[in-house]
Length: 107
Image 1 (cartoon, rainbow, N blue to C red):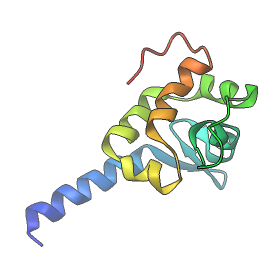
Image 2 (cartoon, helix red, strand yellow; image 1 turned 90 degrees about the vertical axis):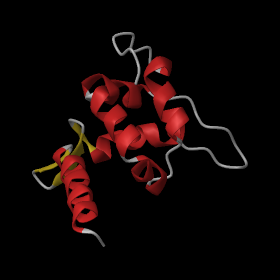
Image 3 (tube, rainbow, N blue to C red; image 1 turned 180 degrees about the horizontal axis):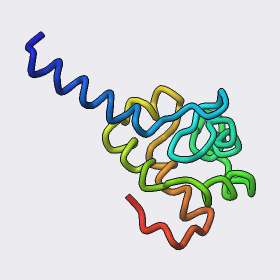
């Protein structure tokens, strides 16, 4: 692999890791504990047999504390990360609107 390619891959990985932190043993992504995002999972995934669920109040509450712009950066630069967790990017982008987070203008 060419040295320049390795350099760019390293920069991309460092950029990704800068958006994730570990606080008291919990993984935080964009200012939100990973476990706190679990109520959102049914609203951003879909199965063949059933459509995605509407977001529950616990999901909307955690989104109010999240850095949504950071999530946009992750989705734009690292779409494989969403797919790795079974998240549909289009459903994820629609989540703030479904939670009526009017202050968020979108990605």
